[in-house]
Length: 525
Image 1 (tube, rainbow, N blue to C red):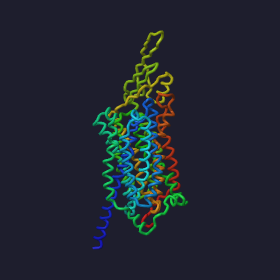
Image 2: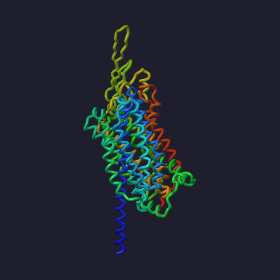
Image 3: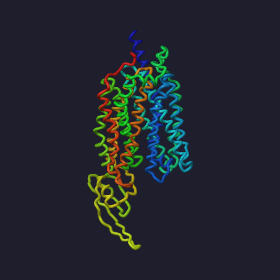
């Protein structure tokens, strides 16, 4: 009889945990969807909200606005983390959901630069900051809430479902954008259709708010509140006490900073690299990322569950180390695969029309037409020229002959190259799952319940929001710095990898030295 009661109790506990996971995950997924629409549509947003006379400057300004949402996240972590430790987890991340959804919906309504001038980017910037503040409070609340509902010894497994929501949110954003774009057509989508994914946020948030209103408060928080053990000042207790501040710094520099750059390199920078360096066509590049994310997402749960058995540290550190070693070879292979299919038009004193390169060749034979203008007459001479496919040699040749690239045509990859690109991105997503799958369980276990929301949120959002969120902007600027002259191809398209490799390397060393591989039982606090 006692055995039956125990089995029923365990079944009810698992069922309750599953309901908590589902409710928390749906809301968190929608918040990530809202947050990532902006980055996915960065190119179109730059055309809508910034002057069009300098596309590169407009894109960088858009990426800076995108990055601002990341940079502000630690402030959201402090503000909402404090509220979460004072009034409860449930209502705090219910508020963040409403702020996020409202801001995203509003971006879809902002008139463009042509209509209201510089007020357009200013309004979008403010709304982006609100998105960042909301996300700063959301993740810590969701991770803490789920962890405090999870059975002891299974915290890595259950919290890993929350870890999937960021990737699934990006996947959802890509999917909605592609469906709307294909339905309306490229021109209509670029004109006004891009607003639809933002406006859809209102419906998604409404559903999520309804679900979250039915959730109960964390049992650990309720118990602590009944016992009168709630922290009077979570901020002071988190960051003024030496031992806790030490753990915050170790968590940041030894885990979340490296995890953040690996996460954003493997997903956002991979998409940017496909579109800007490899010139892969818009739809195909997004589908490549989407398929890789779909295949790779279950590994968040695999590594989260594995961390319950062998510890969090070595899985996260292995992911960082492999990423550091592998990034350059992977991205070089991606660039080489696309370069063999890319057509480049160059015009100035000399015009080169390149034929599509055949896979396996080292050079492309092109027709060159030289134009010389003397005394109003035009003299034309057509010759054959062999252009190396190697990007560095091509840039040198262009500089030597004073060639000015006019356009880079988007290329649609053939089936073989298409599958290879999916594989290259999937490998990076696996790195992401290794560093990100166990991170929530790791963070909630190293901080006490009374200040957990505040203490874990700050290192997570500095690591992901600042170190990770700046990957697209810093990496793009590093690549731009290698251009031999304006308009020419970059001398080193892989220069952007210097930043994530450096941060992940430092984080790996600190993590190996100072992070323990033991998992803690929060129930005995």
